[in-house]
Each structure stands twice: as structure tokens, then as C-alpha cells.
Amino acid sequence: MTASDTVAARPRRAATPPPFRAMWLACIGNRDWPSRPGLAAEQQRAELLSHLDTAVARRLNAVILQVRPSADALWPSPYEPWAECLTGRQGVGPGWDPLGTAVTEAHRRGLELHAWFNPYRIANHGDLSRLADRHPARINAGWAVPYGGKLFYNPGLPEVRRFVQNAMLDAVRRYEIDAVHWDDYFYPYPVAGQTFDDDLAYARHGANFPDRAAWRRHNTDLLVSETSARIKSVRPGVRFGISPFGVWRNASTDPRGSDTASLQTYDALYADTRKWVKEGWIDYVVPQLYWHIGNPAADYAKLLPWWSRTVRGTGVSLYIGEALYKAGDPDQPSAWQDPAELSRHLTLGTRYPEVGGHSFFSAKEVAADRNGAMARVVADHYPAPAGPPR
Image (cartoon, rainbow, N blue to C red; front, side):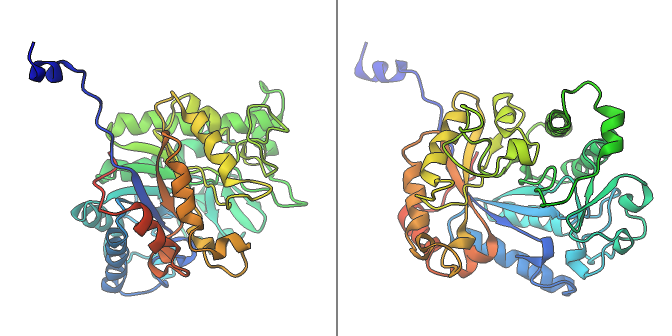
């Protein structure tokens, strides 16, 4: 056997995909885009393309665009009204197709386009009469729950769960998106002194559970597992990713948890994020590790290895959500005034083979780069453009 034969006989290693380098592009309350409601269609389009160009300039390879901010849509949906962030009036069309344009223009630039949906948020106010006239929450009595001055769909109603899946899957059918993406909102974050009123739904559907918390977690599990299966049936190549709050449970509560002293998504949001990874219901997870290295309650350097261990052997890709919005903010701890803090996060990630990339919150800060933290990340870790993350 010749040397060349020996080389040819060696088993080939699977090609390592380029790292995930993403940014979130938030539309809720016009955080990132459009810069304000009511811009002309050509202005909205120009701003969107500018964000995509910024992603390319920062050597990113994916954009996570919020396309269903508050039970409304950035595409002509048969299920829900046009998004308020576009025109300032929910249900009024902007005169173009933002999601369709985003997919086409992102792909033209070599970027993946992940469509970011919020399953249950209806509005950041508590007034049903302010919703569009034919809004599903107004038509279907009992679907909406006011809580903390906001409106939410009731996750305990099977008809609600089916509806929100249908509304999101409409975009999967229509557009060549690369992924369905959810953030950290399931049951709402707790508000002191207030109760999320799902008594009727619990009385109707919760009899087989030991307590309301177990029933609520089951409802969220069903949303995740059913959506996962339906995405694959509609368009098998589309990935499903979730970006949860960064702490599943504290080790003081559960020995499987992290060495933290924080809100627990398992208990507070009824989101068993660890289970979703272990069951393989999602293709990737992007925990929001929005703390600095050394944070006493939730240390980035302790949570990163916890998540690495959690995904190990599951086939679920791990990307890390980074709090770029804190960099240079004078109201944040001193660690965030150091432009090298985020770069150290990425350096730490290289020690864990499970870490497949990072995503930055959010687009406005990627462009403005208040204290040069993003430029430092690019200089230290992104020396050249990356191909698509798959």
C-alpha cells in the first residue's frame, strides 16, 4: 500500500460547519427596525437593507428577524393583522412584504434569515379595544389574559396552542426561511402581587397533573414538541431554535442545575428548556447568557460550561446569546465598560467544543457599537467572513 493509499483509506471527518455569527433584529416597539412607525415603504426597505449590510460588514452570517412581535405579522398573514411597528396602526399594510424582502436580500448577501416569532404575547398594553378590529384575540372570547399591564394568549387552551402554531407555520410555508426562532417568552415573567388568571383552563384541562405548575410546563412542552414536528412536516430543511433565559434551575433547587442564584425559567416561566434539548425537540439552543464573567448571581463563566454539558451528545447545536446592548452602558456594572468583556466571552467559548457560535443583542448596537466592544469581537475572533452556519 502506497502512502497515497494510506491517506485515502483514512476515515474522513465530518466537515465542521462555520460558526454561527448572528444578530437579533428586533421590531417590538421599533427597538431596532423600523426606526419609527409610519415610514414610507422605500424608507423601511432601505433601513432593513442597511441592517443586513451591517451584518455583512461585521462578518456575521445570520440575522434573526422578529417577524411576529405581538400577535401581528411582518408578512400578509391570513391569520393575524399587519404589525403595528410598520405603520403605527395594527392591521394597516405597509405597501410591501418585509419578510419576503428580508429572506431574498439576506440570502443575496450570504446570510441566513431566521424568522423570530413570539408565541403568546398579544400586546404591551392591557386594552383589547386597541387591537385591530378583526384581531383573533378580540374575536375569540377567553383567549386573552391581562397580566402585568399587558395581554397574553392563554397557553392552557389547546385551541390557542393550535392557532399560534398555524399563524407561525404560515410563514414557514410561504418563505424560504432558514429557521423558526423563539426567544424567552412563554408564560409571562412574574409580576409581584399579580396572578396569571388561567383558573378556567386549569379546571378544564389540568385534572391529571399534580399541580398547576406541572400542567403549565406540560402546556409549554406541547407547544415546543408539536411545533417541532409540524415544521419538519411542512418544510423539513427548516431548523427550529429557541433562545431561553440563561438559567434553567439553580443547583440549590435541583442538583442538575447551574451554580447560580437567579430566576429559574423552569419554575418562573414554566419552560423546561433542559428537557427540550434532551428530547431533541429543537435543532439549536441560544441561551441568553446576559451576564458578565464573575457576576455573583449568574456568572457567565459558570453558565457556559453548564450549557455545554447539557447539549453534549444530544445533537442539538449550542450558540450563546451575548448582551452587546450592555457594553458601554453607564448603568451597567464596571465589567461592561471594558470593551474587551465580550471578546473574553468568545475566547472562553473556544474551550468548549459544544459552543458553535454566538448571537448578539441586538442590531442597533451591532451598528452603533457604543464602546467598541463589537469591533473588538470582530478583530479578535472574526478575521474573515464566514460562510453560512450550516
